[in-house]
Length: 242
Ligand SMILES: [Zn+2]
Ligand SMILES: [Zn+2]
Image 1: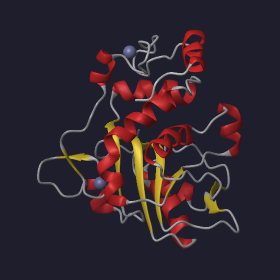
Image 2: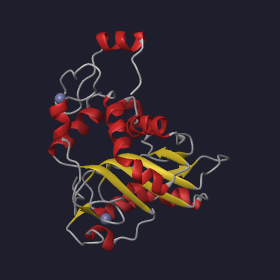
Image 3: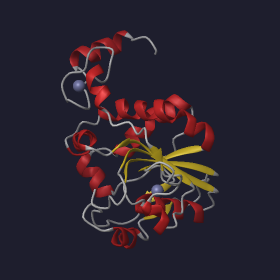
């Protein structure tokens, strides 16, 4: 951990950091309360070999991955998308708590060192949001998670390659099949930009994988060799409703 500068001390006093779990003021020098940290739903069970969803012991693929041929190579979510994470993500995305991105991104980094060593990505690419939603929210949550991951790992963050094309319907209420249809043509690569060989997509939640696949398809077509993903949360099996 690096030491605190005077500027940081002053900022801490003026704008105390809130804990992303209880939303109260976090203890100084910490971004999350000790007790709240213990409530984070770390995945300890076996994981699907493709998407990393928690599965029963000895199960190789989750039921989703047995049905769908994903375009990405492999991926994982750090935490289970349970009630604690649901609330954390809701504050982070919809209640303006963009400060949570740094805390959560650092937690993602702590838990993904082995995966980063395995995948060896050349670049981190946050899943882009629609321009309209960006204007509404003021930030892209995936980019806020990716920034501390990039800083801590030294893997470059590439923001200007993958672009969101058109305003698609909110995915939330759609089933798996409709999600895929809704996203076809939703992303494109910026012209004239170099496309890294091994790409790690960063997002907040993985549910059916339709968003990650749409991004991966676009990047692979543009010349990427392999696309991986890392998300803050991941649903259980058959969680299309998340
Ligand atoms: Zn707390
Ligand atoms: Zn899976």
